[in-house]
Amino acid sequence: MRALLVHNPTAGTKGHDKDSIIDALHLADFKVDYISTKDDEVKSALKEARDLVVAAGGDGTVAYVFTHMPDHDVPIGVMPLGSANNIARSLGIAGTPPELAEMWRIGHVRPFNLLVVNGSDEEVLCTEAFGVGLIASLIARRTKGKKADGADDIRRGRRALSEILGEAEPLDVEVNVDGQPWKSDLLGVEVLTIPFTGPALPLAHDADPSDRLLDVIGVEPGESEAMTEWIKSPHDSAPPVISRQGEKIEIRWRGVESRVDDKLAKAKSDWQQVTLSCDAKPLRILVPAQHPAVRKSANG
Image (cartoon, rainbow, N blue to C red):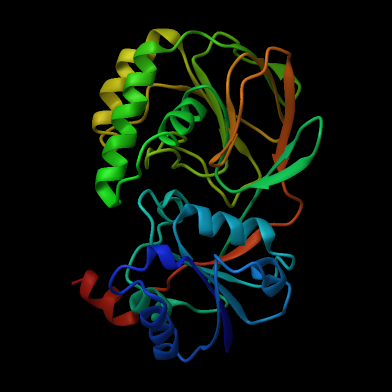
Protein backbone atom coordinates (compact mmCIF):
# COMPACT_ATOMS: atom_id res chain seq x y z
CA MET A 1 0.00 0.00 0.00
CA ARG A 2 1.38 3.42 -0.95
CA ALA A 3 0.65 6.55 1.06
CA LEU A 4 1.21 10.21 0.29
CA LEU A 5 2.24 11.94 3.52
CA VAL A 6 1.36 15.65 3.59
CA HIS A 7 3.19 16.98 6.65
CA ASN A 8 3.48 20.36 8.31
CA PRO A 9 7.14 20.47 9.43
CA THR A 10 6.48 23.33 11.84
CA ALA A 11 4.41 20.84 13.85
CA GLY A 12 7.58 18.74 14.13
CA THR A 13 8.04 18.31 17.85
CA LYS A 14 9.67 15.06 19.04
CA GLY A 15 7.68 12.15 17.66
CA HIS A 16 5.94 14.41 15.16
CA ASP A 17 8.91 15.17 12.89
CA LYS A 18 9.16 13.91 9.32
CA ASP A 19 11.33 10.86 10.03
CA SER A 20 9.24 9.72 13.02
CA ILE A 21 6.00 9.83 11.04
CA ILE A 22 7.52 8.04 8.06
CA ASP A 23 8.84 5.36 10.43
CA ALA A 24 5.34 5.00 11.91
CA LEU A 25 3.86 4.46 8.44
CA HIS A 26 6.60 1.97 7.57
CA LEU A 27 5.76 0.08 10.76
CA ALA A 28 2.21 -0.29 9.40
CA ASP A 29 3.61 -1.56 6.06
CA PHE A 30 2.92 1.58 4.04
CA LYS A 31 5.32 2.76 1.35
CA VAL A 32 5.61 6.53 1.74
CA ASP A 33 5.86 9.48 -0.63
CA TYR A 34 6.55 12.63 1.39
CA ILE A 35 5.67 16.25 0.72
CA SER A 36 5.87 19.23 3.05
CA THR A 37 3.03 21.75 3.33
CA LYS A 38 5.72 24.36 2.60
CA ASP A 39 6.24 22.85 -0.86
CA ASP A 40 4.53 24.60 -3.78
CA GLU A 41 3.67 21.22 -5.35
CA VAL A 42 1.24 19.96 -2.68
CA LYS A 43 -1.84 20.49 -4.84
CA SER A 44 -0.21 18.68 -7.76
CA ALA A 45 0.87 15.80 -5.52
CA LEU A 46 -2.72 15.29 -4.35
CA LYS A 47 -3.78 14.71 -7.96
CA GLU A 48 -1.57 11.61 -8.30
CA ALA A 49 -3.46 8.43 -7.42
CA ARG A 50 -2.35 6.51 -4.31
CA ASP A 51 -3.93 4.05 -1.90
CA LEU A 52 -4.02 6.59 0.94
CA VAL A 53 -3.32 10.24 1.73
CA VAL A 54 -2.12 11.12 5.24
CA ALA A 55 -2.65 14.66 6.58
CA ALA A 56 -0.19 15.23 9.45
CA GLY A 57 -0.51 18.62 11.10
CA GLY A 58 -3.05 20.95 12.65
CA ASP A 59 -6.49 21.90 11.40
CA GLY A 60 -5.00 24.08 8.64
CA THR A 61 -3.07 21.16 7.15
CA VAL A 62 -6.02 18.77 7.45
CA ALA A 63 -8.39 21.33 5.94
CA TYR A 64 -6.06 21.95 2.99
CA VAL A 65 -5.88 18.23 2.19
CA PHE A 66 -9.64 17.78 2.59
CA THR A 67 -10.56 20.70 0.34
CA HIS A 68 -7.97 19.98 -2.37
CA MET A 69 -8.55 16.24 -2.82
CA PRO A 70 -9.59 15.77 -6.46
CA ASP A 71 -10.57 12.11 -5.94
CA HIS A 72 -12.96 11.66 -3.02
CA ASP A 73 -12.67 7.87 -3.30
CA VAL A 74 -9.09 7.92 -1.98
CA PRO A 75 -9.18 7.45 1.82
CA ILE A 76 -7.58 10.06 4.07
CA GLY A 77 -5.80 9.35 7.34
CA VAL A 78 -5.58 12.19 9.87
CA MET A 79 -2.64 12.57 12.25
CA PRO A 80 -3.55 15.53 14.51
CA LEU A 81 -0.44 17.50 15.48
CA GLY A 82 -1.92 20.94 16.19
CA SER A 83 -3.41 22.70 19.20
CA ALA A 84 -7.19 22.64 18.78
CA ASN A 85 -7.38 19.73 16.28
CA ASN A 86 -11.09 20.45 15.81
CA ILE A 87 -11.49 18.13 12.84
CA ALA A 88 -9.80 15.17 14.54
CA ARG A 89 -11.69 15.82 17.80
CA SER A 90 -14.96 15.80 15.91
CA LEU A 91 -14.11 12.45 14.34
CA GLY A 92 -12.88 10.89 17.60
CA ILE A 93 -9.34 10.58 16.23
CA ALA A 94 -6.53 10.75 18.78
CA GLY A 95 -3.22 9.01 19.33
CA THR A 96 0.44 9.01 18.35
CA PRO A 97 1.44 8.46 14.71
CA PRO A 98 2.45 4.81 15.33
CA GLU A 99 -0.80 4.09 17.19
CA LEU A 100 -2.94 5.61 14.46
CA ALA A 101 -1.09 4.10 11.50
CA GLU A 102 -1.32 0.56 12.88
CA MET A 103 -5.06 0.94 13.57
CA TRP A 104 -5.94 2.13 10.06
CA ARG A 105 -7.78 -0.27 7.76
CA ILE A 106 -8.45 1.00 4.24
CA GLY A 107 -12.10 -0.11 4.31
CA HIS A 108 -12.77 1.24 7.81
CA VAL A 109 -13.87 4.75 6.85
CA ARG A 110 -16.38 7.41 7.79
CA PRO A 111 -18.02 9.78 5.28
CA PHE A 112 -17.15 13.45 5.75
CA ASN A 113 -19.22 16.15 4.04
CA LEU A 114 -17.41 19.32 3.08
CA LEU A 115 -19.23 22.64 3.37
CA VAL A 116 -19.76 24.57 0.12
CA VAL A 117 -19.82 28.36 0.52
CA ASN A 118 -21.37 30.17 -2.44
CA GLY A 119 -20.80 33.92 -2.35
CA SER A 120 -21.30 36.64 -4.90
CA ASP A 121 -17.74 36.29 -6.24
CA GLU A 122 -16.76 32.63 -5.87
CA GLU A 123 -17.51 29.16 -4.53
CA VAL A 124 -15.19 27.73 -1.89
CA LEU A 125 -15.03 24.54 0.17
CA CYS A 126 -14.43 24.40 3.90
CA THR A 127 -14.12 21.66 6.50
CA GLU A 128 -15.17 23.31 9.75
CA ALA A 129 -17.46 26.31 9.58
CA PHE A 130 -18.64 29.50 8.00
CA GLY A 131 -19.31 32.17 10.60
CA VAL A 132 -20.27 35.79 11.10
CA GLY A 133 -19.43 37.70 14.25
CA LEU A 134 -17.89 36.09 17.33
CA ILE A 135 -15.43 33.49 16.01
CA ALA A 136 -14.46 35.75 13.10
CA SER A 137 -13.74 38.52 15.63
CA LEU A 138 -11.63 36.05 17.61
CA ILE A 139 -9.59 35.18 14.51
CA ALA A 140 -9.10 38.88 13.77
CA ARG A 141 -7.88 39.54 17.31
CA ARG A 142 -5.57 36.54 17.49
CA THR A 143 -3.82 37.23 14.19
CA LYS A 144 -2.33 40.31 15.87
CA GLY A 145 -0.74 38.35 18.73
CA LYS A 146 1.92 35.67 19.06
CA LYS A 147 0.62 32.11 18.83
CA ALA A 148 1.20 29.84 21.81
CA ASP A 149 1.50 26.06 21.75
CA GLY A 150 -0.85 23.26 22.75
CA ALA A 151 -3.14 23.71 25.71
CA ASP A 152 -1.88 27.25 26.36
CA ASP A 153 -3.03 28.30 22.90
CA ILE A 154 -6.51 26.88 23.60
CA ARG A 155 -6.68 28.66 26.98
CA ARG A 156 -5.69 31.99 25.39
CA GLY A 157 -8.28 31.56 22.67
CA ARG A 158 -11.04 30.85 25.17
CA ARG A 159 -10.11 33.86 27.29
CA ALA A 160 -10.10 36.09 24.22
CA LEU A 161 -13.50 34.79 23.11
CA SER A 162 -14.92 35.52 26.58
CA GLU A 163 -13.65 39.10 26.29
CA ILE A 164 -15.25 39.45 22.85
CA LEU A 165 -18.56 38.17 24.23
CA GLY A 166 -18.48 40.86 26.91
CA GLU A 167 -18.14 43.57 24.26
CA ALA A 168 -20.39 42.12 21.53
CA GLU A 169 -23.44 43.93 20.15
CA PRO A 170 -26.31 42.39 18.12
CA LEU A 171 -25.45 41.95 14.45
CA ASP A 172 -27.11 43.15 11.29
CA VAL A 173 -27.74 39.60 10.09
CA GLU A 174 -30.52 37.57 8.48
CA VAL A 175 -30.54 33.76 8.46
CA ASN A 176 -32.76 31.47 6.37
CA VAL A 177 -32.81 27.70 6.96
CA ASP A 178 -34.21 25.69 4.04
CA GLY A 179 -36.07 28.76 2.79
CA GLN A 180 -37.57 29.69 6.17
CA PRO A 181 -36.51 32.86 8.06
CA TRP A 182 -34.73 32.08 11.31
CA LYS A 183 -33.19 34.41 13.87
CA SER A 184 -31.83 37.90 13.20
CA ASP A 185 -31.12 39.25 16.72
CA LEU A 186 -27.79 37.47 17.30
CA LEU A 187 -24.28 38.19 18.57
CA GLY A 188 -22.85 35.57 16.24
CA VAL A 189 -23.89 32.80 13.88
CA GLU A 190 -21.91 29.73 12.84
CA VAL A 191 -22.78 27.08 10.25
CA LEU A 192 -20.90 23.85 10.91
CA THR A 193 -20.59 20.28 9.68
CA ILE A 194 -18.57 19.19 12.77
CA PRO A 195 -19.12 19.70 16.51
CA PHE A 196 -15.83 21.45 17.39
CA THR A 197 -14.71 24.89 16.28
CA GLY A 198 -12.64 27.86 17.46
CA PRO A 199 -10.48 27.12 20.53
CA ALA A 200 -11.58 23.45 20.73
CA LEU A 201 -15.18 24.26 21.69
CA PRO A 202 -18.01 21.75 21.00
CA LEU A 203 -20.29 24.55 19.83
CA ALA A 204 -22.40 22.38 17.50
CA HIS A 205 -23.10 19.70 20.07
CA ASP A 206 -25.13 17.43 17.76
CA ALA A 207 -23.34 18.00 14.44
CA ASP A 208 -22.47 14.90 12.43
CA PRO A 209 -20.06 15.29 9.49
CA SER A 210 -21.36 12.05 7.97
CA ASP A 211 -24.96 13.26 7.53
CA ARG A 212 -25.95 15.80 4.91
CA LEU A 213 -27.30 18.35 7.37
CA LEU A 214 -25.70 21.63 8.35
CA ASP A 215 -25.90 22.80 11.95
CA VAL A 216 -26.71 26.49 12.39
CA ILE A 217 -25.67 27.88 15.78
CA GLY A 218 -26.73 31.28 17.08
CA VAL A 219 -25.65 33.14 20.22
CA GLU A 220 -28.39 35.41 21.55
CA PRO A 221 -27.64 38.73 23.32
CA GLY A 222 -29.12 37.56 26.61
CA GLU A 223 -26.81 34.53 26.75
CA SER A 224 -23.40 36.23 26.73
CA GLU A 225 -22.80 35.66 30.45
CA ALA A 226 -23.95 32.04 30.24
CA MET A 227 -21.67 31.51 27.24
CA THR A 228 -18.73 32.97 29.15
CA GLU A 229 -19.35 30.51 31.98
CA TRP A 230 -19.76 27.60 29.57
CA ILE A 231 -16.44 28.40 27.88
CA LYS A 232 -14.69 27.76 31.22
CA SER A 233 -15.93 24.13 31.27
CA PRO A 234 -17.25 23.39 27.77
CA HIS A 235 -17.31 19.60 28.17
CA ASP A 236 -19.61 19.58 31.21
CA SER A 237 -22.81 20.61 29.41
CA ALA A 238 -24.31 21.64 26.09
CA PRO A 239 -23.60 25.25 25.06
CA PRO A 240 -26.23 27.92 25.80
CA VAL A 241 -26.99 28.56 22.12
CA ILE A 242 -29.95 28.17 19.79
CA SER A 243 -29.59 25.75 16.90
CA ARG A 244 -31.29 24.47 13.78
CA GLN A 245 -30.40 21.92 11.13
CA GLY A 246 -30.95 22.23 7.40
CA GLU A 247 -29.65 21.36 3.96
CA LYS A 248 -29.47 24.89 2.57
CA ILE A 249 -28.56 27.93 4.68
CA GLU A 250 -28.65 31.54 3.49
CA ILE A 251 -27.00 34.35 5.45
CA ARG A 252 -27.04 38.11 4.82
CA TRP A 253 -25.00 40.47 6.97
CA ARG A 254 -23.14 43.75 7.02
CA GLY A 255 -20.71 45.70 9.17
CA VAL A 256 -18.87 42.74 10.73
CA GLU A 257 -16.15 40.20 9.88
CA SER A 258 -16.92 36.74 8.52
CA ARG A 259 -14.79 33.63 8.22
CA VAL A 260 -14.43 30.45 6.17
CA ASP A 261 -12.62 28.06 8.51
CA ASP A 262 -9.67 30.20 9.68
CA LYS A 263 -9.69 32.54 6.66
CA LEU A 264 -11.00 35.98 7.63
CA ALA A 265 -13.00 38.40 5.47
CA LYS A 266 -13.08 42.02 6.59
CA ALA A 267 -16.27 43.84 7.51
CA LYS A 268 -18.08 45.81 4.79
CA SER A 269 -20.77 48.45 5.10
CA ASP A 270 -22.75 46.93 2.20
CA TRP A 271 -24.85 43.81 2.61
CA GLN A 272 -23.07 40.54 1.86
CA GLN A 273 -24.69 37.18 1.23
CA VAL A 274 -23.71 33.50 1.05
CA THR A 275 -25.56 30.25 0.43
CA LEU A 276 -24.27 27.17 2.26
CA SER A 277 -24.78 23.49 1.46
CA CYS A 278 -22.91 20.16 1.54
CA ASP A 279 -20.59 19.13 -1.27
CA ALA A 280 -22.03 16.58 -3.68
CA LYS A 281 -19.71 13.71 -2.74
CA PRO A 282 -18.32 13.05 0.76
CA LEU A 283 -14.70 12.31 1.57
CA ARG A 284 -13.67 8.93 3.02
CA ILE A 285 -11.85 9.44 6.33
CA LEU A 286 -10.04 6.54 7.98
CA VAL A 287 -11.28 5.86 11.50
CA PRO A 288 -8.92 3.82 13.69
CA ALA A 289 -10.16 0.26 14.19
CA GLN A 290 -10.07 -1.13 17.71
CA HIS A 291 -7.83 -4.18 18.05
CA PRO A 292 -9.59 -7.40 19.20
CA ALA A 293 -7.29 -7.57 22.24
CA VAL A 294 -8.48 -4.14 23.34
CA ARG A 295 -12.13 -5.14 22.94
CA LYS A 296 -11.57 -8.23 25.06
CA SER A 297 -9.79 -6.35 27.85
CA ALA A 298 -12.35 -3.55 27.79
CA ASN A 299 -15.16 -6.06 28.24
CA GLY A 300 -13.43 -7.63 31.21
